[in-house]
Length: 292
Image 1 (cartoon, rainbow, N blue to C red):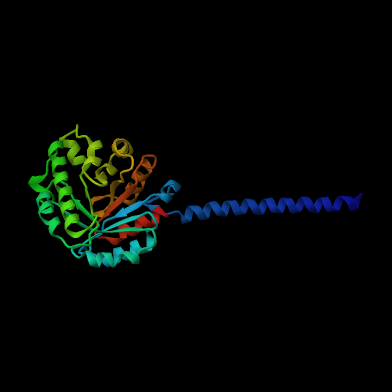
Image 2: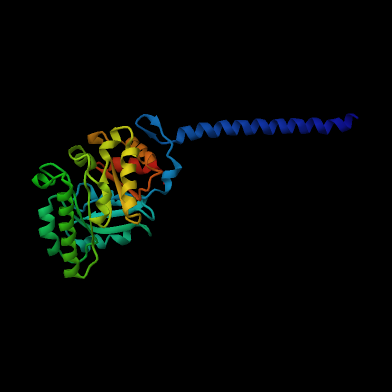
């Protein structure tokens, strides 16, 4: 009997030892995960897995500050399905950059204007090579100035004139460039609460709306999400980009941007445009946290 009991005692000791080791490993794994989680704004943040497949959009300009460093960061971090609208006065230089991005990243030679009159007068005269033209439609002397209006009929008339200028460009150069505007939602909404955003697909080739001000308010998901749903109800196939921001100078943090994306993850947003300032650290911090 003594011999038959001995193996059982060793087995029990072995099982107990394994259980103890597993418990220690579990505790260590939890501690390590907490230590390695990215920290934003002083708090530990775990990126939402739902954002891992989210398309990102950027709009760097070849004439902007730190452009070489920014392009390098984007070339290293973007993946298939992301968009880069590279602005500049030389479309050939932009097109030469397309092959420097990873396969599947959509890179567009782009030119933008702030005043509708400049857009309409200039676009038909530009050389072949552009893929996209946009109107940065915002109030302010440094933007659309006195040409800015929130009147729905007038806004859509402006967009139609710009789109016609792009059509003229396409006819002249044998191109197939597209038009879009980047209206600021809060600026228009505050002056015209009844503006019908669902009609945007009738006046541009893709929809891009600035919602970054709502990063500092509760419920960006309800505001931007409902607008996106209305637009998709008009044209479900149109590409919709929601603009948010990471810009330290104006207190738009990485945490703000991630939370905004989380609030909108269940809405039919095709891509998030991240507007960043000249500080490359803002861009790199966001890409580090999003961990795609």
